Image (cartoon, rainbow, N blue to C red; front, side, top):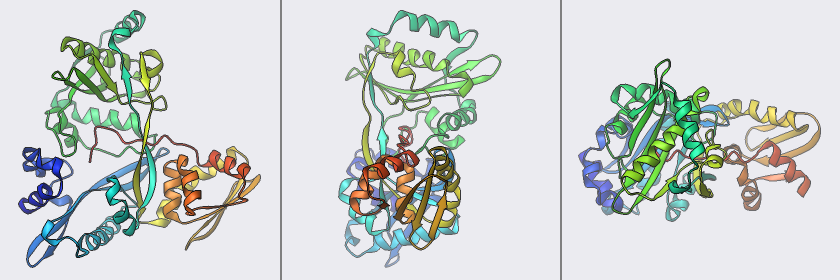
Amino acid sequence: MKRVKEIILLSFSEAAEHAEIVEDLENETWFSWQHWVLAEADGEVVSALALRPGVMWMSGVAVPAATVGTVCTHPDHRGRGIGLELMRFADEVMKRDDIVLARLHTSAVRFGFYGRCGYVKAITHHPSMRLDPAAIRSKIVQQAETELGDAVVRPAQPRDATRMNAIYEATFSHGTGAVSRSEHFFLRRIGHWPKLWMWYAPRFAVVDDPADGVVGYIAYSLDTDNSYGTVVELATLPHHARVARTLLLHAVREAQQCDVRKLDVFIDVHEPLGWLVGEFPMHGESDVSVMFLKVQDEKTFVDLMLPIIRQRAERFEIKLTMTLAGRGDVTIGDGQELRIVTDVQHLAALLYNGAWLAGLLGQGALDSDPDTAAAHRALRKVFGDTHASRCKLDGF
């Protein structure tokens, strides 16, 4: 671990600016020694990457997945193909551990490297809205206070970690892009430990209901020096969604007490609590960026996702034939006849977010038969925009 930390500090300028977080790295959920894959040369570690195992939800389906992160090689050993060999070995590790799908985020300068490793591009959304605390209607405040009832808003405590993890999964698991966490993840966050690639420690508050216990939480940060705040994450149990108003107002009041006038909220109208955008004075739009996917177990991935594709094809009366490289034809549904020709890797990118359909067609990574505007419109029904997003609190 000491050598891994040295390589991280030499490889990432952001990490070098926060050396104290790197020093504590092995105590973070996904960076303990068990989650590293290493390359050695001349008897010493020269390259490393971390694997975060768990599941990633795609249209409500829990796909066994691993996030690949913090891939780095010591400067003295770069240019020798060691990183590429390490990525190939990581594939073997993931297949051994029954990981179906690998995912990663990176900067544009490394797109080519991950492409050579067999990863394909997909697109993910980054919702961001600016909330004006001074323009919140008194009606919303009164409604939130009334609906809170006998429940209370309080700072999160270590005993809440298990419950908060369950609330996270209940809120985000039916969407696309969210990844599973753990009790330890929340214990670290509640303890105000910053993490690699997320250099600040957000505050946490929960709603504690006398009958049902903790039913929702909010994570937010306040930069008093720059009068700027961020609502990083907001989650509630589905049948307690109304307390989201109270939690958001709690963060607003905390901001006002600290004289913070600008508050960004990472929420989108397509998310489970997206209705808050219509109730609170927010404005903004989602940004889109690239992420990378690689299917490690093609058969299992197709078996997991086929029911979703079939359901959509039948709903829109489409007879869809998928010709998948190395796997032959799969025909589902009945009605308007369409065919797509692609491979399982690019099918995963399309299922992750159908908004990438035009990009895949343009790249030649997917062919449509017939290749007409009407056929493309029909495909967009089966492979719709999932508004896939990565929860901001995750980082890695």
